[in-house]
Length: 177
Image (cartoon, rainbow, N blue to C red; front, side, top):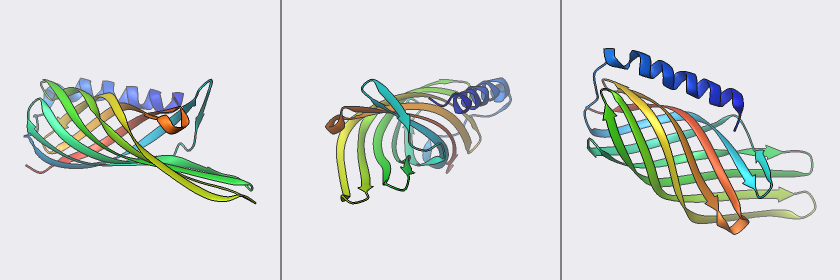
């Protein structure tokens, strides 16, 4: 995990917790969001990140105080040099199980990730592969009326490649009240 990004995410979460008692909780409903991410690929004994400038798009619906259903598009990053390029992305569909503490939400995520890898190597051509694998994660969020901020860790495996993907994100959401 990128230590600089992890420190920023932790500082953001602590800031949210400090100012949360002054805010009002958001109602349940449809929400949209976006965030910045960093992803690490664990390749057996090695670990590598593709790109620190990635993003996440969020759409969700929270029908109950303790449950939300959410879909995310996650740009997992890309890397290229003069001989090869690699681009990775994923779409996830998850249930979030939430526990509210005033305006702070702690949550666990469980669902499925549809990942896609595109690669090309000079002289060998290009190839694409994709698959569906389980995903899970944890997060903390705070709501200020319709506005929400969250820090999250999510993990899924690319079983075809014996690779685990670990993503940390800091996101903004807007709930339509």
